[in-house]
Length: 397
Image (cartoon, rainbow, N blue to C red; front, side, top):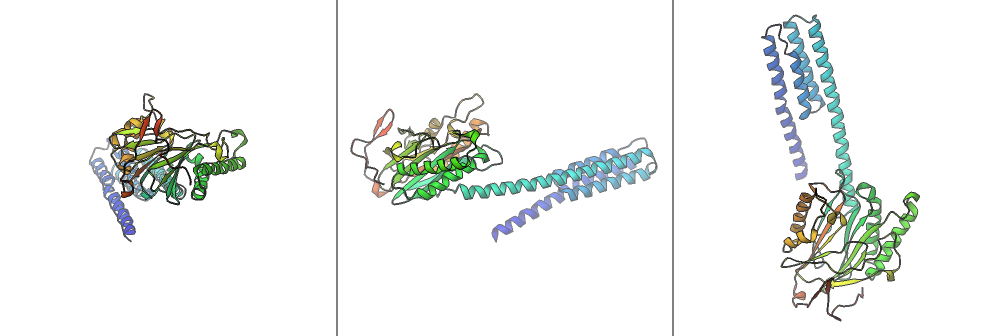
């Protein structure tokens, strides 16, 4: 009820605003007419009447534009009657010219409004598709506080080839972020396939390695059925699969050609965990033993930042890549929502407001709890975090 009242109020306010602005071209017509009538017959201000119908489309539709055009033509007729009569060639030409120009303006206004309506419909369809395909991640899932961000490269698109999803099963959270080759609306088919496969298999497979193999099988079947022969071997998707237990302060990860996440710790510490990536989906193997499981610590208070290559490959006017790790280090103390808000603003400032590729970001913050009160030792190596031998639980699923 409140939403409907808000829409009605907005329409009424827009109508009132348009009619208030309508006074300006009408006043212009009156002023030009009065001045022309009281001027010598050698001075002709009538042609200036075309300004009124030319201005009206900027704030009104075809009907009001037609009304203003008719008033302008009527004013020109009045000027002709009082200045030499309607039979003079000059006045006849002025009246016909003003009539034709007003008619063209009305037709243009009608086409413009039609295009606006079509564009609004396309945007509403794109928004609906986004909610159906790319479900918003919950703000809280398991031990995690979550925020996500999607920036489409195409101006009129809200979705594209980047994707993410999360599911909870058996005291653990599984997250996927991926990037289909291509961008914008042309990559939606592959993205929908991968998301659907993850949502179906994410809570059924006992390990990330089996889940990766299952997703690979789905992508391979899809490409075999729908991939054009001229694009054979050129369509693939990278993906990063993560599993975060509710109680153990660790993260299990399998990468299929996707960039590693950033681990943000309090005190402006950013670490890149060691990753052993397998080939991207669509050109790799569908066997679980061909994937590698990487495990690293994820303590309460830490934040995992997942991203697609559209973020780190975004360039400024000088061709420099966006320094995600350096920028993220400035905001390690921020909440996931605030972190992504700052990164979005900074990324768009870096690129001048336009991205050449789709970009997605996910921030996962492990909230402190009584179960995690006891500290867990960590050792920092050059290639990322490693636990002491024997301190990590096995991937039992």
